[in-house]
Image (cartoon, rainbow, N blue to C red):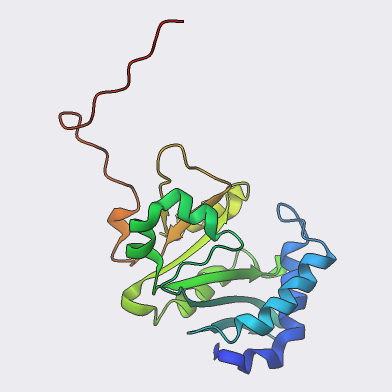
Length: 200
């Protein structure tokens, strides 16, 4: 099920509960204040251009959800965006991310894991991504999560040399720019000579 725009606010309490159930445990260990901030963010995020929420529901309520919106042309600088921009550089940010569907949260309650819930949520929320362009980021420390995205066919975007930070950017399986996930290495015959180092 997909909700668009502020219609999702009718389910805000259930989403916050699912968020807390998902992210209060390791490796995220989010505290009560961070969970409260998600509730506040949901109010403003629901007004973003292209905002939508995919829901996985059962008799017990919301088993999981994914939220996303269209990344603006002026790439943000708050939250993890500065790390993303540093790793990709402005050209790849423009080509791969701006105007694409940005997956902000993917939360699956512990009891609902291992049944394809995350895969289904990602498939639903990206179904109408502009030109099949969707992306997300996650923490490098969340090794199980990183492995899951790789297993689901998402493409890890390689950081430029010397710019790796604590986050990893992934492109959706059908993203047309996936071949640009790894920057082209310079041709050794045309690369500039390395700098000379004075002897110690």
